[in-house]
Length: 181
Image 1: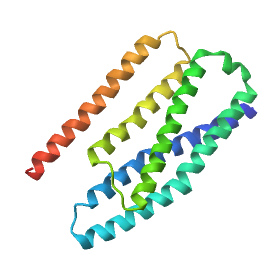
Image 2: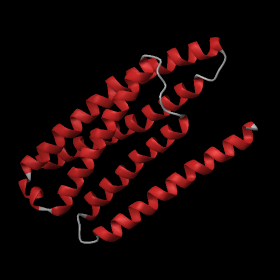
Image 3: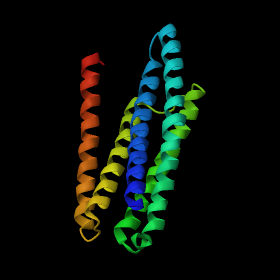
Image 4: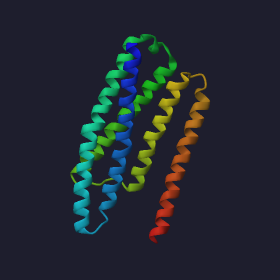
């Protein structure tokens, strides 16, 4: 019974972590695009968006990541046999990549806080899709609990990632046409 409670809390933290990561990159995009506005609008928008970034990241993002780790490792302590399963190691590798993604977001947040907008909104949109690819990989590994179909799973994941990238590129093209550029 204890395991089910720990698992439920772990899932809540995972969902919260992903929500923060999806939304923080959207805020990065909006702040980047605000830089092309007239001075008064740029200042107001940038100030508000950077404030929203900070609150989202430090009130939800970081605590959710920490909670995900605490309750994830608690589950492994309750069921150490998970570490004997190849799918769990693949999941843990994906979580390492997710943590690196989190750190990249932290770096971008710090840059934007200093009014340094190093990435285009297009690159940020592509970055946003990386979290989606990691989410899909982790969910499939946890639900299916198999690494035997790894080749087909990787091919499916590459296909999914390619579809997302294509969608972002189509969006960029349509947006460029609408603006007349």
